[in-house]
Length: 160
Image 1 (cartoon, one colour):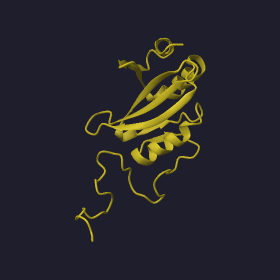
Image 2 (cartoon, one colour):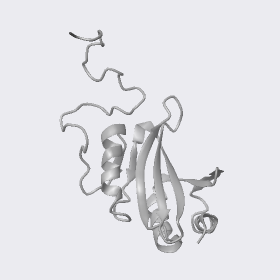
Image 3 (cartoon, helix red, strand yellow):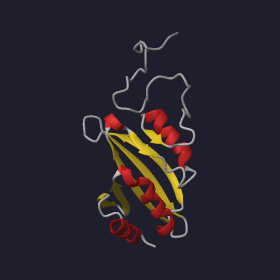
Image 4 (spheres, helix red, strand yellow):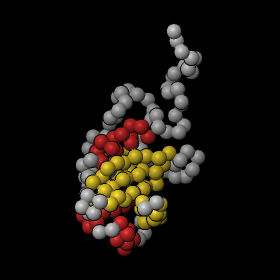
């Protein structure tokens, strides 16, 4: 099944949720409403063959609305095809439903996205820090995060 067929299937079954489809250098990206992300991902797995979630990450568009984009990089192993699903997320409600029930690989990817970007995944089975210490404050990949980190003195040069 080609990516175009998958996109057509999404448009047919989720016409009100497909916000944008973009092609760039042979890659297809579909932007969808966050309310339907689990159902959309389930359809992509079950009916379009995207049986591997390679990555889930967050993008910070500081100063824009919506501020965040959650990006799911999916792969159809049999057809050797990629598909990118993007979900816009507002800063004041940085929560998206987990897709860890659709692809178990999403579990740790979502934890990393929460840990570094502060985007929460509703109904995640174990949403806790995965890279940073449990008592670490903030989310260091956000563009408004202090460059030196929380409560750090500015770099003064090499200490001998």
